[in-house]
Image (tube, rainbow, N blue to C red):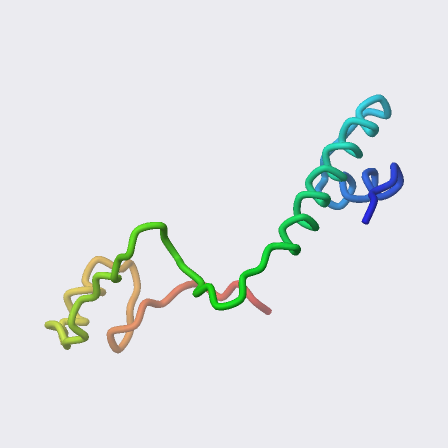
Length: 95
């Protein structure tokens, strides 16, 4: 796959990046080099290789899924300027 100047300008517009006309050629060659590298990666045989998330084997630390203390909603809304039935009340912003 090859990127032309029109595609570079379109990518820049979509990314909201302003590029000068003199820079289009350099970006075009950079994008073509990146796409060439990606195409080169597709030639690698990855049959039987497990996906990995890190170079070192590690397990995620997890906490116990336990119920913590609660039941003090009145203390939570005590600093609210306006509350009702332990709910925060806010001004209506949608008509």
